[in-house]
Image 1 (tube, helix red, strand yellow):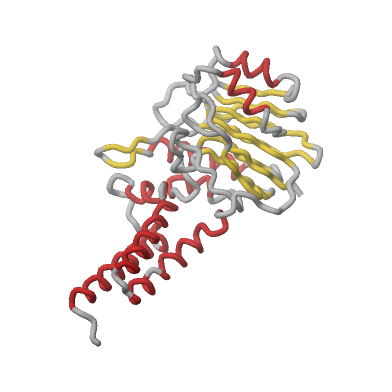
Image 2: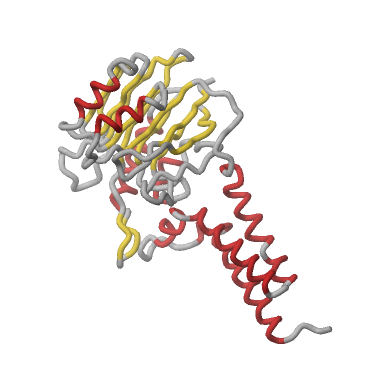
Length: 312
């Protein structure tokens, strides 16, 4: 029996939606950024396009549309190619170093409690952003025994269980930002498996409003940091921080194109109340970040993120 016109319309509609999702997943870089940085906005939430696929499958089943079900194979495959490797939050690969990254929030009502939560991660390195002068003593007191080595510059800090050397400020200020805007440092960590250069950074915030995705200052800061990374002679290097963007966001490409991302784990870290994106990153060069995972909420609007790193 021939398909009824209404059934054909449903099949074509489902196929069209599936093709649209497939196109956005496979060709997201083709979405222009000139108008309100639409491409960056899409790439920030790109994994969530996968939510559309089960909805299309349910509609196809309800309509008993074989063609609609077959059309859903394309976006499913596209999503798995992009994000299937991150589906498991844990990797079986060995690692040498654990890093916990956290934007602790400058209005955090319980810095001591947050410091205890970071200590409980049992990481060799603890990197923080939005560290205020008033809250700093709480982190120093709580982490002193487990992480006796520390480096702080402006609002970013690094606490380490291993010796630190060659500590220096990293200027990633976009044009027009004041001298007091200090959100970058570099230190060499003397880990048991060998030295590794560690950058702790906090890129400018972005805003999503009527005019679009405002990220020009963040993008400029990422380019400055990318140039600094390119000139760094360290054989092993980590960039840890709040980048205010995902690794898919093309605005961060001058930086992320020089680094490798974790092999496993979505680790959505923001906002803490309902995490939808990982903007807190542990990225490497000359090392392998085998996995990344999010920890329980603290008094911050971000979740802590734990990265496992193989230095060999």
